[in-house]
Length: 569
Image (cartoon, rainbow, N blue to C red; front, side):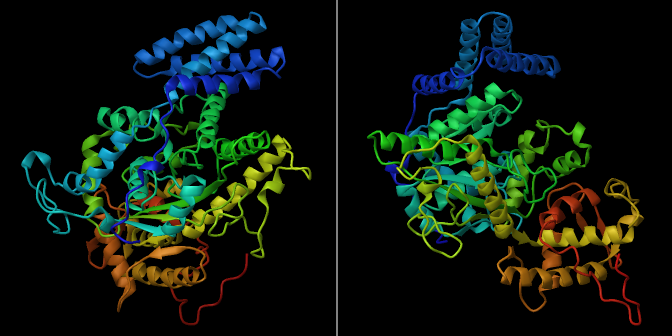
């Protein structure tokens, strides 16, 4: 991608929707869902909200926030309505929907967007690569001279944007796009926001977890740059339905949208293999509503396309906390981590300085767009079949007379097909970096050295048991690299690995350097005497980026001379 990308055109900015308009739209949708329901179903929906919210309030650490205290009063009013008539139940339920609309919605500010995008590149280079604002001047780790007010590090040298950006620019003018990235870090949202701007794409609205609004500076900008608030503590169906209605309304209004179909950050570091289909299905709902409006004499329906996006980081700020959480028993896993490394602003600044001091430390790969059924599309956004021929995607939802056929079960099957296509695209577009490859090789060698131990037991290996011969690690990296290069050549995945006269040694040296820069205990560290020390947790986390790359059968060393072949299991 050219480093001087055009800025988004002013007419591509999202339409600012007022809260009263948005609340009215969500209440209308809620009424449409409520009217066909039996009395018992309405009471059950309300009772579930009361039960789960009461439990959340009781389990709240450090007491309730002022907002929670207000909401608690609404929940208690809803609790009383459960035992009353249908009219009172609907009133209480719609009252909660109206309250949730106010919590979710943030008004996009074109003025703030223009300001933020005008200062973002220089802000990233001057602020985020400064060694210490308090000292007045600093230097980047690679000697690029990124001082507080002096020197400059172009973020586009650090954040590589890949994919057919020109195609996406064209499609964004005529279609509504849904961007669906993999999710590794709390840095993902601002990173993608920057990548969209740098790629000359218009801004997208996106859901951001409530915990990310705790920083007042971030909250100010996020709430005006297209972020709407998602409170993942609320797990009852009424809130989920309201959130889906919000997404449907936004997409139907022509807002380009971004959400992470994998849900929360990938705790294990793996590329996602599962998709949460709730928000993903809202694109199909919005498109069908547009078709219905078109048939009734309205404007032509604007088509909706889905763009997979694979993120790759050389280093991840929250890696230690995330893998620790992944290793816990699933029943004890925390759904929301509010006290990880990202909660410490100094850690964020330190990490960002160091990660931006590395060349090509982050890769954002915009994948080939898909239709709402998982089919590829051509340069005009038309759906393509397996043989490359054109498909009439309206035939998926219209009958022979051109009338829309409503079928929730059919739509779930379609969204399932789209989910599968997204997972395949994420794995194909996953970019392997040197830290991933070296960590994967180190973890495989640890497993080979302790074959009878479980993954959890390997976390507690002694210092001596964590030592590996550097030569053995180098050989393993070389053998894996050969297999990896073959898969890249076949289009099965992507890589950004060093080349040259000795690519294996270059890969190993670069990974060791990067691992040494941030984490208190590097995933792999050179300790002298021809040995390296492995930190099992971090080696597992970074190596998991290759967990589904099909390298599990690659031998890590040459068989000994005269050795008998292993017997088949």
